[in-house]
Length: 383
Image (cartoon, rainbow, N blue to C red):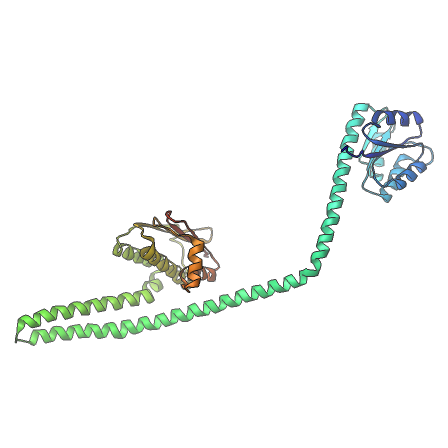
């Protein structure tokens, strides 16, 4: 199917110029001609699809500049070109500005030059028309969306409020949990552990005073002391796990390294612990305890499920951010499947990690694939 020709109007009071123009360009364009400005206006109003208007600068009655001003007032989209054979540069510039002229061409015009000018003018006109069409389509789309905008905004506001409410509840829940852990830790340390230590001393004193059947007493003394010492160690470990006292005194970095080293040694895992650009950081307790708990959960998962023999833990500061990353070489897992199973079984390990980092206005990413290990990365803002 042939392309529709662009329609061009040429107004000139010299019929020979009109005839030459028509013969030169009628194969490529639909040419309309007029011998004066009034006829040109009539043709322009009758043909609303005119793409380009050319007019001689000096014509009797209405000048080319006046014609262009009238054309612009009727329809600003067609491209306007002024044809001039004389006049100063200042006059031509004034005419171009007052008539909203795209370009002027000197008489006598060269056919090749005019061809290039018309080609560029019609391309620009096509772009203007397409832009106008797309603007109308966009306007209609915007009008269609305007009716739903208020409802959407209301839904968004309610969603934001709901999310903030959930965060507040979660923050309160975690705060209560931490307070309860603190209370239990104090009870275990100040009561149970001290009672067990006293019992140990009493058994030792009794054994030293017993004389009859010394071999039996010695045997049971050793057994009792071993059990008691084991209980003391368990209670102290539990107390430390519930609320690491070193966090309050030394911050996050040293206690976290000590914890990771203990866990790695217990499970025969090679640990690479690094800190980068963190010496200047002083973290709020909320930030320290949540990152510590996240590392606890991650290390527990590595020891229980990953079957890894190497773990890299890194704390990196910079640009008012702190990044905690744990990378293992274990068996990995399919993230979506694991999350779905965790929801079904109401296991909240990974979800609690995400909630903790969310409370710090940070970002948690977990990247894992079967057979390719796991990368856990928590990024939180710090001042």
